[in-house]
Structure formats: C-alpha cells, structure tokens
Image (tube, rainbow, N blue to C red):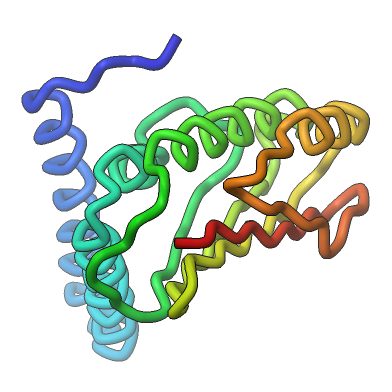
Length: 178
C-alpha cells in the first residue's frame, strides 16, 4: 500500500532537505572552500531545473513519485535527469507510475540493503513518445526477482528492453509512445 503524503509532510521533508543543503554551504564557506560551495550550488541548480522540467510534463503521479522517492525507505538513492522539455505529453501517467512503483518495490527486494545502491532515471521526450533509461548500480542479490518482474510487466503501452544485467548493474530502456 502506497503512503498518502499530505502537504505538511511534503513541506517538512523539503524544508529538511534545504536546511541540510544550506548547512553544507555554510560549513564549506567557514572552511573557505569556495570552489566546493560553487560546485554544490551548481548541483542544486541542476537538480532544481530537473525538478521543474519533470513537474511541467503534466504527469502528476509520476512526478510526485520521483520527487518524494528519496524521502521514502528505499534501499537505493534515486536521481533523475530530464534531457529536454516538451509540451503536451500524452502517455498513460497511471500506467507509468504503477510500473515504476512496482519496479522500485522489486528492486528493494532484489538488492542488498544498506549498501551504496543508486538508481538513475534519464527521461528523454521525443517526437513520438518518451524514452526512460533506468540505470541501477549496486549489489543485486536476487536476479530471479528482477527477471520475474520484467517478464510479468510487459504491456503494449510500454516497451521495456534490458540493456545490461549483472550482479552489480541493471540498465533498462522503456519507451511509451504517444
């Protein structure tokens, strides 16, 4: 069962994240690490631009899932990048979100917890649909769970192709046509 997020919880988590960022900047300034401060501010700008692009896709369920993902108890750290902006995205938001929730759940069950596990999602809108690249790096201990998920989650509205799969890496490409 997916947790319902109310506005107070969202603001609390967001405020906590921003306070952590400001403390990192302040600490680096106090140690006179100006280059690190500039680098960190640039990272924040890029992350905020990606959040803005994601929010403008008019995929509210999917955007909400990604925006709150690192506040939930996953065994991986999520980052995402939106390569370009596009108006009038017309894909099934609910299908995409439910598939991604199921994928996150499968990944949580298939990887070794408390390790340096990272999932990167690259979102590339194209003229005929949206392409998603899911790149995981970490420790996969239950390959069979991932294989079962991938074979059970086939749908005509979303083509998923495995690009690489090993004990430490999983790369998927998903495409949803308009």
